[in-house]
Length: 127
Image (cartoon, rainbow, N blue to C red; front, side, top):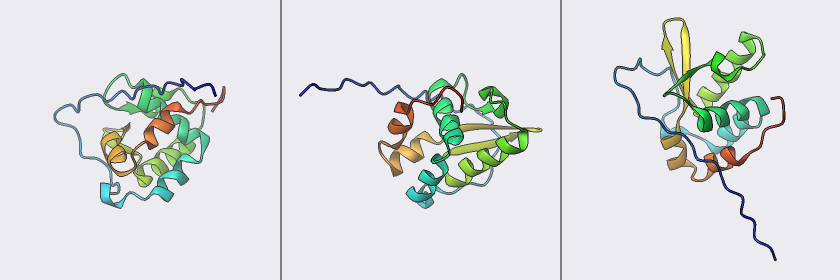
């Protein structure tokens, strides 16, 4: 039987800069629930957002516009809120802008292998 040699892309975890604004309300690591996290990831756009933040981050956190998704701001705000409330991303307010990053350490501690599955997912041509 042939063996599969599928390689999972590596997450880009960048160091946390000093003097960050406080994060917006989010569940504590011990409060993360698998069914809530999977529910948030069941939407292809949200799965795309987490995967892109996980694999392509150029700095510690990113604004919504960095993703280059052509959706109304209200729609993106809804998706980001769902991801934050599920515990997948951490958001901070920088003036009028919210920036996000994946809670890699919290998710890996609570659900080992989950982010590897997200990283290995291949999105459709258009999210």
